[in-house]
Length: 310
Image (cartoon, rainbow, N blue to C red; front, side, top):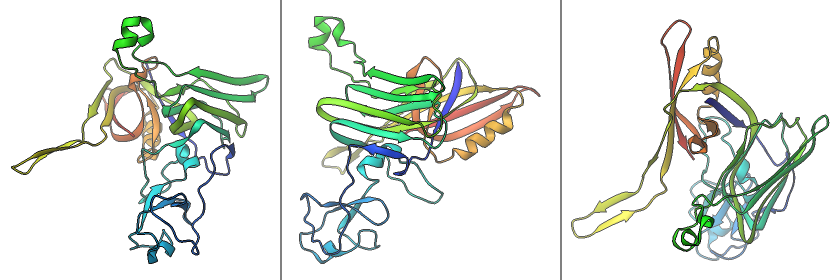
């Protein structure tokens, strides 16, 4: 079982050749905003979007959302169209996570990545199908992916399952066997006829093989929900759970220093971590929590990893 890491390229507006998702309207000092009304979400000068939550016509409705100590604007994160490509830039920065791009029926992008694309992953998808098409990714070769997202509960197996079991939609699709040359445009479509298409992350980048995963990778779900009691009533504060995967990897002889530098560079950066090829339940889009390498002999080193899903 090969352990792989797919590190996303930094995809900005310059690499997005085309998309059907428009940008939010820019904040304008001359406009007065109303809470909950169309236009209450604006694009500010820092490239992030903010929502007006104050009283209609308030003085702060004219204030620049990026200014400190203003109570009537709340940061929502990157613009809708850029959310699948948002990554952490620099240190001592905060990044809004667990966002997704959304658009009625279908989301489309044409993206020209700045480097060779060996891995292409779609995370936290709500839709029925995914397409990725590119021409001349290498001499005489084309990319043509058409994938129907599956029902993980297999309710179509029988009438009994269809009427008695809930539908469990597949939310990820990942490929690590591609070879798309730099700057070749990739046309992407995420379709959801009759509904709203959503995608949390589109990861395209190089695939790095770190070593061989040993026989006991594991995953766990950590609950962050809180049960509270004040002596008279008990309440449950429900929060999104966390996902964790962990494994032990045998690092090839002579590759220890390279692996150390790869993991150091990924600290605080989201990537796709594939612990076991052929077992998608052990693949996660997330960040490194800890890495411990132990040399058991002069030529054999073993790496213990814990990855926190986003």
